[in-house]
Image 1 (cartoon, helix red, strand yellow):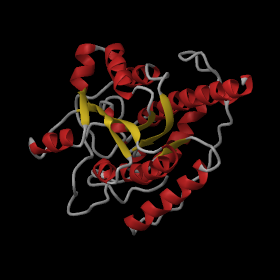
Image 2: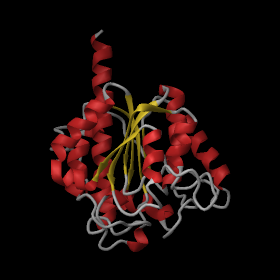
Image 3: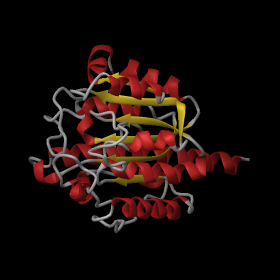
Amino acid sequence: MPFDSGVSYRPGARFGGNAIREASRLLRPYNPAQDASPFALAQVADAGDIAANPFNINEAVETVEAAADDLLNTGARLMTLGGDHTIALPLLRSVAKKHGPVALLHFDAHLDTWDTYFGAEYTHGTPFRRAVEEGILDTSALSHVGTRGPLYGKQDLTDDEKMGFGIVTSADVMRRGVDEIADQLRQRIGDRPLYISIDIDVLDPAHAPGTGTPEAGGLTSRELLEILRGLSSCHLVSADLVEVAPAYDHAEITSVAASHTAYELTTIMSRQIAAAKADKEAK
């Protein structure tokens, strides 16, 4: 999804999808961490780029939603590569049409629940506020993971809590460990349909320098991957991975981390698709 007109700091996420594609050349068919071959378990296809208008955010949001509708109507699950985090809103709108309000796990250094950003309603800092207002999220099962860094004020946290979000900070992950965090998240999600949205800046800049709004003190790539693997039993219906800005990357560090993250999410969805097919055939 080559769109980054909703960014507030460093641009360049429109080139993130292609950078992740290039870095994915190193991936192999078998995922030993999940003991699965995702490309054999389900048909995995690159649906190409969505041509969104970079000069009109409202129109771009509508374009992304329409494209997601078309893909989901085929029975597919989406692993969308951004692009900036603005695209999460139209993707959630589309997913909710099929599944109703969904649980959300939001991996990010930032809350992205502000009412407006520089006076604008649709930006990479506002998608989840809009999603809550539109009733497309299950407010009993919303979590931020990896949150850290300065805020505009304590009211940011108060507003976020009122919307139903729980927060797992990057410091929480360090202190409590990935297994305990994954267990907490699984319990909060339950058997609800789950959408995972990952801003690559959830990782520490040492692990992901190529992003638009880096914050010190983030997760390691190992911690992120292990938490995701711990969520493999959750009903993951679609996911996005956003904010990779390759112009600020070094030696493809960020793109490689992003490609492996997308690989883990794809493996989870492929395993679940295969299991659902087997159950259906058994009946």
